[in-house]
Length: 358
Image 1 (cartoon, rainbow, N blue to C red):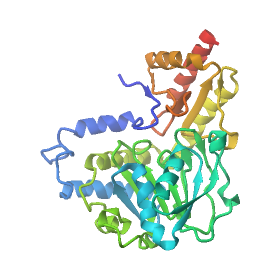
Image 2 (tube, one colour; image 1 turned 90 degrees about the vertical axis):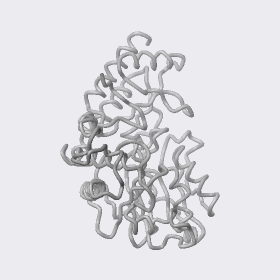
Image 3 (cartoon, rainbow, N blue to C red; image 1 turned 45 degrees about the vertical axis):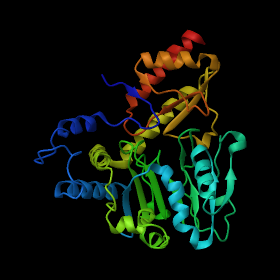
Image 4 (cartoon, rainbow, N blue to C red; image 1 turned 135 degrees about the vertical axis):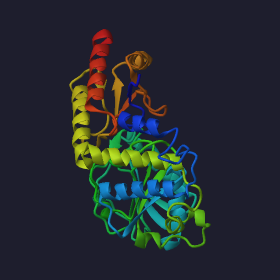
């Protein structure tokens, strides 16, 4: 029996998608073999790949002057690939550090080029994030990098900034949760394992003009333009993850698109935060305007009860609520595949737990 899965990633996938994939797994169409067993260059898989890309372009309203790449290596690989490709433009870039992942991006990028950390909230335990438009950007920055949603600390930058520099965003834990204006960005990247599908796939959405400025001295496998030229098949791609992503894109369209999921995600987050804010037993430490709608972190009034909360919630079918090991506490990741009913069940358990131990 499937239970309520609040894992931050790899995260829940719609049961509708899981069941459709299950029915197709032994044999895909008339292939006589599983989707996992056919050539990535076969007509059958090329059709799968084309449809997935086409649907993502439609869902996000991606203009013709952008390309979409289906790559490997996770979003973490992009921490190195981005500066490697654009350090030759000026040798420096601006980074906004609002949590664990942007700190890692900064540290990796600093091995390659002169990265300027123009904002950090680490001293305040990453409890807040800036309005990027109010920051002083470096005149010679090749690009500005930020993360709209930090999965571990549960903070977010909800407003997409208008700046006169190429803007790059790690959208791993927020992509497809709401409509966005892709044209505000030069490059968007996202690991698939949170809101797109299984681990092993990374989506890169890149402005073609920016892409053509990549570093020609790099091996082809490290260059965006070469991946685009080969239609993301410069090497054998993660075919099953690509196929699964296509199923999720189809499900998003069928469900009502990003407007539907934005409304649902807003409702889920509002309901859970409202419960936390009205409790003296639970608390959230993130600044109100920077609260994530995808990863809701909270602490118990007595952390000695943390292990009981985890074990008892697990017994009730509420999975993976333990916060990241670096910060402790609890975390409920409520991506698109988590319905409102799941959040209601979580609140019901939290209420029960408080009445028992509060």
